[in-house]
Image (cartoon, rainbow, N blue to C red; front, side, top):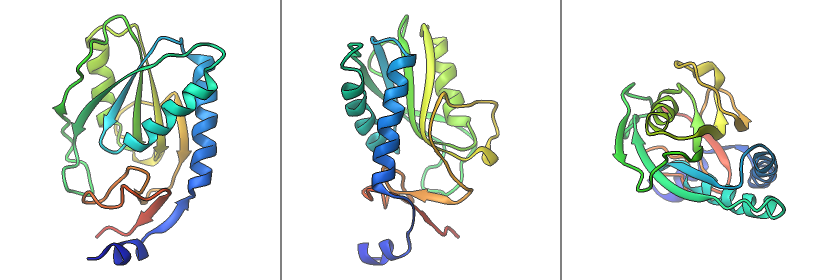
Length: 185
């Protein structure tokens, strides 16, 4: 399958300009709600684009309050190469910095079942974080299996398979500058 063939199957759901405006708005809200000495934990791989744009937007929005986030990454897996979650979350790559006593903002691409974010939140809490907040680019409230909500949400989307802006299907489509949907069989 060529890149052109893959791209022709993607329906744009949220444009790149809509994403940019919303990320800026999220950053402006976050700097008013969280302390300036913040640890951002980005859940890889899907959130890497969102995290990069968010930390740059935080820098611009937080110039007055002196926000100075540190960033670490954790890779958790529940999907593998499948289109649906296995229901089991595993740590593929752990944090390299301690979260003990830190104010933590977990950043993820999408909140669906809630299993991954519940796992990450509980683990970080167990490791002694002073506070934990969650920011997600996308949420699908109808898919929730765990009692968890994000504190900061970019967009609520319908129950369709989202790709682009870091989100993938079979490790394709991450490079798209917009959020699109694809049919998954």
